[in-house]
Length: 271
Image (cartoon, rainbow, N blue to C red; front, side, top):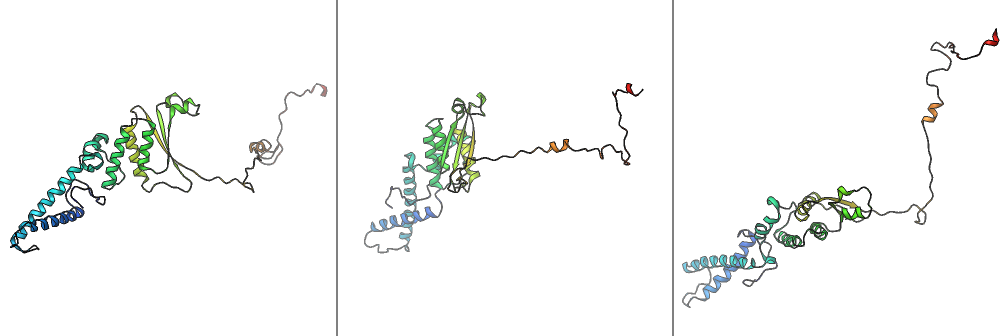
């Protein structure tokens, strides 16, 4: 790549000048500088490869110059937010946004994390509005995300809520038919809650719900909805009232007939 031109294929944009990718870029840049230095020598220096003492010295100079050039290219890219390395983005802006140094539970590579930080900054300066909450969820979840505000639901007469719920909102993640949870659901959910805590108004509470959609197939032969209804009512205790649970009626435990106490009969005519 030409000097001070951003390489679109480069993956590692960290401040650490180590790793396989960095060593490969260093070798390529040092070789180009080494060849340029050899071309500056007078004609009596005929060696074109590293071997004699002067070529070894030139090679050492080329490596250090290459290391310096690569560092300057990275610093040059840090002048603009879209090209600033993720280490600096996190240390300056991420430290301010992620309270107490918390980091997202979702795994990112270097470029993904840098883009995530830039998107988060843009959302942060939108303010604590429903659109910001929805955009936050869109950073982590692909699908239909709906943000509902409780005070609007109460105003529209939604049952199950009263004035005590007015400072709350809900984030509904609608899973389409045939869809499923993301494989890293717990990490996504934890990160989303952390980000909402940063954006939401301090006096509000929120609830996240994952809603599955399904296809309803009517039972009719032609696919129509059958509006007929059947019902059956049974009362088990009705039979209990018709049963005698003390044993055999008018008999004691030995099978003898029981004397029945009679009160209130008029026997005046018997005398």
